[in-house]
Length: 572
Image 1 (cartoon, rainbow, N blue to C red):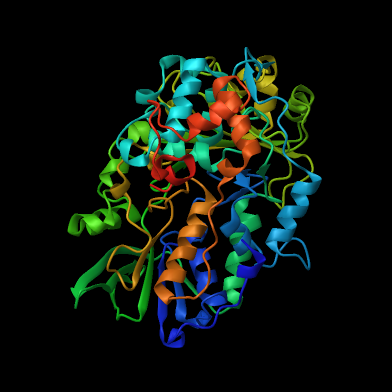
Image 2: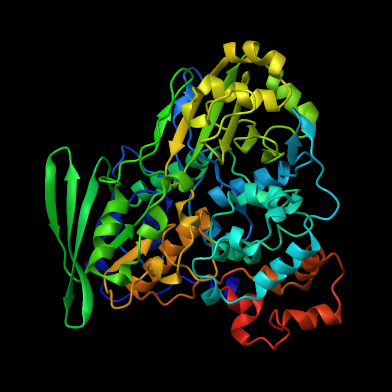
């Protein structure tokens, strides 16, 4: 964001008389509350956040303790280009570092403990799998370049498997790139293309190093969500937890689309909240952790396949059935077998065996090595050994987070699918791949393991059309906006904290008519250094005048239109 644009905009007309109803207390909803209060000058007492669970944070959660075992359901990769997130974090006081904002605290920890992977891929029970040589074949490199140059409107419904050769999915590039972002061959090539462009500075020839990935001081809940929640409370924002929203009423009034009511359900039953045009509704229409189930060391997490009650997804389905402007949830929610994966977290107390083994093997301390992917794992395991991940974590407690991209196939060591395994069995499979098979029994004696089954965690990657996701503010809507990972956001990608925060910013700026420049989208593919690095990775040759000429031409040699250049094509 340019310093010139960092203005304190004038309060929008009538802002003191407006009220905001934020449906969903994940990071998108909390960000919307922050932007309403601090940017749009809405009194905090006019803002209410409704959350179905007992706490805010959504997917950015954390629970448990050192004695019973920690159990966050996921982990996020952050980047310096997440401009909207860092703009938000610059407002919020840290609760861990006196006198610092969350932004300053995060910046400091990444200066002192930058992520650099020296052991990105692992195979053969603990051996390094080299990230060197040609990252992909010349044929698939050309296909990748063609993908950069193909307009999004030509990619509706196409999968990665449709676009690339079968060999591509065994390439070093794919092994690093797909596990960094959690893609699979049946996912949308349109979404993959956005990732390739959006993070072109991360995914060229240096794709295995993870340089540029940032991490917070602790887990995301304690580093981001909790400080933001506490700050919003200090601003007078009201939080109504354990309150779900079964439906939103919308009507056409004089050529405008107006949200006229919200049904609320809490411990006292169902209530109808009547709305006027001055009531602004911000709706997070999907959750990656919807219907998640959890288990522990001795129990199995069962995948929730229920379609009758899917929380905010069900509300979205009701809205979409009434009006196509609200998108097509079925494109994302119709195949749980393709949209799920399982995560786990092991809390190991009083035993340094795993911790010392992995530090010696990878050459990285604590959280500084980033994600480690096991390329010959039947489950497609991805492991993240962590340092001090929780504020109350004792010095003799070590944590390991991981996820498996395939939950329905037998493991290499534990001959059962992860979906049928206890937490102890999941950790045993991970230890086997790390070369600690003979140490497993001893480590398990000191471990508590929590697992989570996430039915919709990669649902936003499913093949789709542009119209399948609603706009942040659908055409004609005057007091209703959509937030989060299931909203159409030209140029940007889903499955990031940045997307949640950017949609909140766009929604608040738009519904309040705030006269403040929008934070521009990062466009690393305009940097000739990034472009040259990616072209060399794709083609095996240095960038030349002929290569540049190719980049402004279509794949068939015809001159490309402006909409087909890499930067413009990403806008859809």
